[in-house]
Length: 315
Image (cartoon, helix red, strand yellow):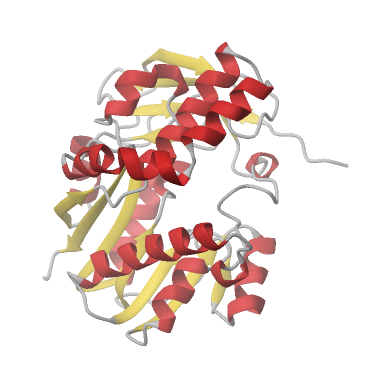
């Protein structure tokens, strides 16, 4: 019997207010799973959140095995260009982290099938482990890469305090039911002076202004919170974490193609024309042609995904 989602109303995860107003409503555009979902803005602090939301116990309904982050090993990727593209993305992440910390102990929260952890481990500079709530994805990471993976979430697994030099969350924070509780745990696990590196949907994205309800960053119903840069910095500061830099690490054109897909499927339909237009837009020639534009979009920190580099106070 398939698990059916249950929903709950919840107050703001930052300030605790129950007062809000509706920003938008929409379907699951990415996977097409049933339901209509709502994003509201907190009347007190302004934080955007999904409310009502699927409960943590039944959220697995919206994370099927073919969910994109549960991807196979990069070395097993059958398409050469995609393999190169994925490896380059991991290399950019590693280089960005190593600008602040050259090596040490690294914990990746929401590590999925372990591709990022494997890329960090193979550099020889890092002792790595991960946390992943999806047991199937965690087992893949364990068996394919031989990684140390804790199955569960950050609030339930038992990890040593003041142990890690770096904790990462790639496109995970917005999925959390209890974001402040997770930040509290992160601050307790990091060594003094350690780094928390994370990526979130960028509410300053040009693409959000252009695409509106079709913006890929909404990703209902899996995304539960949408903090602005200012609110995210306030959240972090409660636990002694201070932002040193915000940076768009790339991939903005791929994100745009996803928003474009959502718009085309709604306006044109899931037709041959939609598939043709997306195929042309995703071709290597078009990607090369538009790469200077999207390079500057990332340089201006206007991409759809933005990465924060926060350091724990060195008490």
